[in-house]
Structures are given as C-alpha cells and as structure tokens.
Length: 507
Image (cartoon, rainbow, N blue to C red; front, side, top):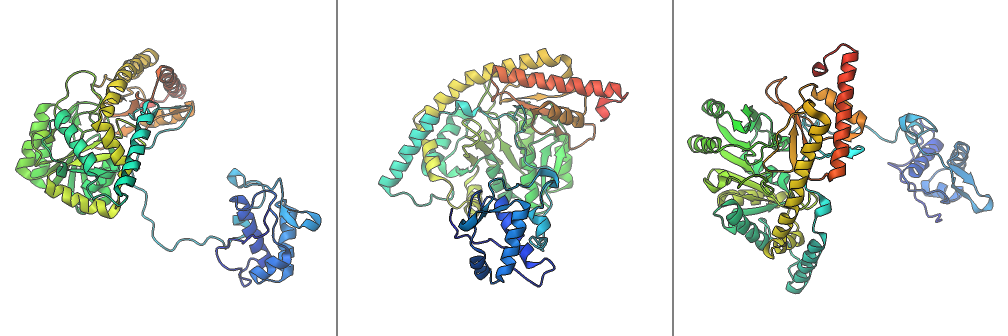
C-alpha cells in the first residue's frame, strides 16, 4: 500500500484549540478509516514525514499513532512502519463501541451559519421498501423493450457522429421527438397541434414545475381537487402559490364551489387529472369537463390537464382530453415514462405557442441541454412503430394483472377493503372502512409490506382517504404475497384494538 497519504483535515491543526493537537490528528485518521479513504492494510507515513507535512512536532505524531494503536485502529508492522489494522473497528449504530471521530475531534464540524428552508409538509412520494414492495401505479421495468431501446440509442449516437450534431438541442426539445409526439397526440388524443406547440421535459414532474414557473407568481391562487397528486401541490408551493382544495367525489368536481371561489378571488389555474384521477382512479365526466372549460372562458384561469393514466385503457374508448376541445384554455401534460419505464425521463407539454416560449425560457435556465440522444432514440421508437407494438403487447399483461390483483385482494381481505376496478391506469384505489390511516401505516410496516403514502382529504379531518395499490409491477405470485401481507396487517390492527378495548378508526 502507498505511503503517500495526505490527511484530509477540515482545516489546519490548531494547537490553540482545547483539544490537544495529537487528538486532532487521531480524530482525522479515524475519520479517514471510517469513510474508506484508509483501507485495512494501508501503511501510513512515518512519524517524521507526517510531522513535516503537518508542521508539528514529531512527538505529537508519535503520541497520535500510539493512541490509535491502543484503540485498535492501527498496528505496528515492525521495521515496515505503521498500518491500518486488519480488524480496525468501525462505528456502531446508536453510538456504541469504540470512540468515534466526532467524540475525539469535537471541533471538526461547526454548525452551519446559513439558513436551510424547512422540508415541505408533503414530500414527493417514493416507493416503499419491505419484503413486498407495492408502488402507486408504475409500469413494470421488466417488460421494458431494452434491446429495441439500445438499438435506437446506437442509431442516435451514430447519427450524431455522422451529422456532427453533438451540440445542445433547442430549448423546446429535438425536432424529431416533438414531431413524433405531435403525430401521436393528433391521432391518439385528438389534439390539433404543430411541433412548435410541444415542449419536451425530463418527466412529468419537470413539466409541472416548468408550468408553475410560467403561470404563477407568489400569492397566486391555484385550485386542486380534494384528493390530488401531491407533487403537483409541491411544485405550486415552491413558487409561493396559494393552493385551495375543491370538494370532489367520484370524478365529479364541485363546479359550484369552483365558481364561488372564482367570484371571490382571482384564480390563476386549476390542476386536474380528468382521465384517471390521481389518486382515486375515477374518470371526470363530460359535464364536469365542459363546466371547467366554460368557467375558464368566463374567469380566465388556465386548466393544467395532467393526462395521467391515459395510455392503458381496459374498458372502453377513452374520452378525448379537454385540450382537444379548447386548447387556448388548457396546458396539457403527458409522459412517455409512464408507458415505458419510470427511469426513462421523458415528458412533454402541449400549449399555445406563447406559452411554450415562456416555458422554454424557464426550461433553458433549469436544464440547458436536455438529453438529445434519449429524445432521438424515443423518436425513433415512436416513428418506426416499436413504441406502439410495445404498448399493445404489455396492455394484455396489465389487463390480466388488473383482474388477478383485484381477485386476490377480494379473496384475502373480503369486506375489509373497498375498491372499484379502474377503467384505466395501473393502480387500484383501496379504502379501508375499519382502520385509520395511522393504524394502516404502522401495521403494514410491521408486516414487511412497503406501500405508497396514504392519501388523505385536504378538506376534512375525517374525510375520504385511501392507498393506491399498483398492479402493473406485480405478477401473480407477487400480487398474492402482497395481499397476504396486507390481510395480516389488517387482522393484527383489528385484534390489537379489540384487546385494548379501543377503536381502530381512532388510533
């Protein structure tokens, strides 16, 4: 092992500190062993060489080495020198075990003098972890057409070399992908659009954030449904907008309440997921859609239409999005990630050209280049039909998983869970009439089941709540195991409450 080791101090050794200099050296070496800079068996410089390096008395280094040897961090290797011990102790969870760097070198990490903003109340939901993991409706990455995508990437790279097009693309995305998305929206969603009406983003959340930047200023009012997609609320909140929830039930938003709010306040935007409402999976009816468009024309707010769940429909021909009828009032958001893989970050926004220019301004400042190769590869998959062949292939798989997951949940949980089969999307909306959200969270964690976050009404303390149970990622065995763990967790919650004479709904 090399002896050319430089101790990574946060600052120079300061003999004037209360901590003796030899302990400052000791703490720095312990820290480098803990973080892996000094592996087992690494030889340290001689005491004379390190003393010269640190401008200290050699005796100080000798004392530090002796202290580290006595603690078991280092060992003397005779004439070869001093090395990191083969069994050098590592820090133990909970502060037990040997003396840690923080205890030895108390002056190592000063408190920050700058302000750190508090974490938002609703953080972006991440997949749960446990013996069984259930997401909130993602596609199965195991079905991803990796070979086709790899070939498309190779083609994109080869074109870039031959055409010398390694430079950054325009702020709105590559021409090829915008044209492909435009054709897709024209034929599949009924939107009369041109490529200049499209702006590509790095996923749906990026599109939401850019839209909020272009539409809102601090204090502006945005309406959302009572139960909604919390990352959208977070995006609006980061701008400083005031988010007001509106009562909704069964896919029907309360249009009278929307109108009352609009008459009292200047509403800048309303965010909805009409095709497959997030999180409840219901579909907004034509009367509600027309009502929102009429109110938008009357009061001048923008409708942010997140077309979530529209790629997989299991029952009937889906309704066209609101953007197909009144594009002048609607900012339309979509994503290819929800079809192919969450790891493939490609989203898009359709809006009037004045809006896309404003979006492009903010996009250029947040994400200067985007990913030209990914966009070119995706455009090739759409253009040569591979994208649609993949959609048709996995649609059958997801339809089977939808029915199987529903069957095993009904068989294992019976009347302890309530849900309707969704017409579209890749998740079920589960409600639990016998337990509280807190009880469900605690018992599923104990059972080893990783569930997405519980969605709770933002209007009433005892309002509707539930959990999205994604079936797209669950094959038959996985769905059965997740249902078994959920049934076990609910049984434990009810039994525990009865033993204590309590009410599981109030826990």
